[in-house]
Length: 326
Image: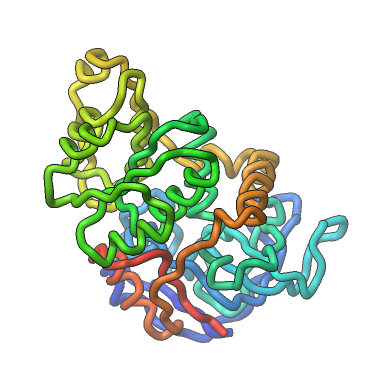
């Protein structure tokens, strides 16, 4: 089969298309053999792949390896007793191996793809939307009527967070860097949009402050994020696409009784198969109600996987970036 492989840790340019054997129905997250083989139509591209191309991600597989965590396509084979069968359209999280024509994924995080979504949207579903729900609800405790501020609001996680928050009855603020990203954020449900290059903290305070901040960006925004929160507000740390890991003076948490919360979706949920099913069930409700419709931006063929990673690294992505495998 054709696949994209990383054989050296020199960045996105190291990704090359190669011919490799198809995977066996095995996966380290499913030692009991509950593994689905998927004929991949679309693979999602995310910031972890950028880090993996340089050996900077916490998951460090042996070289060479096939990157890619998110797939959507058609079931080729499923374990006995599974709710899945050959021919089912699915979205899944395989952790590695998505940038290929066939991928092996754990059955517990492989879900039938709703008729309302195409495979490109399916490739945007698991990592981004499960992270969004986990960050907002499981960790953040979002309640209907609260106000959520989202950094990086035009990217994959950002647009997912806006849609999920809006579907759960929240008021949504977005922080973006330019007009095109504002358009995408508003399409995803943002009620108010602020420029990251302007006095966004003061503008958020004037607009009524936020009860929760979802931050997948990091960098130098943390202090102003805390200052933009209401009393008893929560700042949920999702990632560091901005490149640097911020530090905070903890006395700022005391001043307004604030909470600083980490949201590491994979580490928390992947050992808990039942929780993944519960989150997907809630997302299916939001899909059925029309609130969740993954926004897909750039499409790349397998051969242009380096360009896809470079787009994400340069923070030029609008919505989800995907590879069209078939």
